[in-house]
Image (cartoon, rainbow, N blue to C red; front, side, top):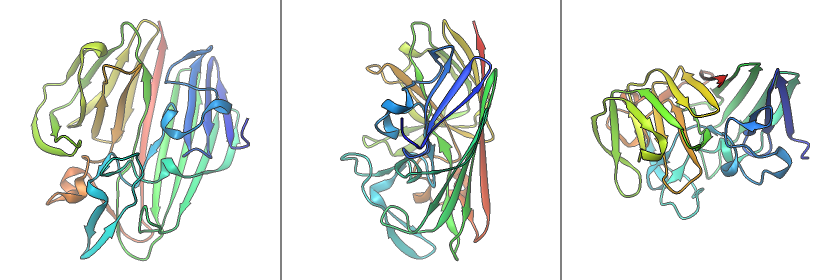
Length: 283
């Protein structure tokens, strides 16, 4: 097992982390049954195969690997196969440091120096806290640059698709994407309700209220966050689906008003913290 693999336990729940693989969650289990898509930490090869990884300093797509910020043009390096956009920021691509590890709690940190993937310095921290019935995670970014920078946060959890996997989520609007998954049109969405096998989403949603209810024949879960947007991905040909709390609409930085779409402007020394909690009942 990697020296950067960390495990915490509370009651019948076990959480495994891989700090060196993007600060990712390798797996979350209840008595050996996966709650998230889970891989034993010693067998995990990349954050993209993990149970969950952090999204920062932006979520989802950053269009065509370039953006303009406060009068200056910047580029971001390709980071997701042959995708024409940069995807999910830099945190999931970098090694994090384990700075604290207790029986039911772990803290990971990452320090970013300006590079081809992101032009501004920042520090990030993830705190994982396990109880016998829940997993709570916080993700915080502090701007350590001497100028303001745009920041968005989120998570990319993967849930196993079971025979009776079902979603109930209160949202108000859906962003329909173009063929490259950039949002182009906002339309009303009267919530999300249905069996996952019948849903066909790869969208960002506005107006997320209350917990996302995720239920199957094994678990009843409530996913909550202090973030107001959600990405839902329900691929027909995969054995998983994703319900992703995020702070901003995909590619918000290219909109006329990024702040209105949830992107934050962090001044030097300013900190932005997000939280996510998964409450778990065994059926």
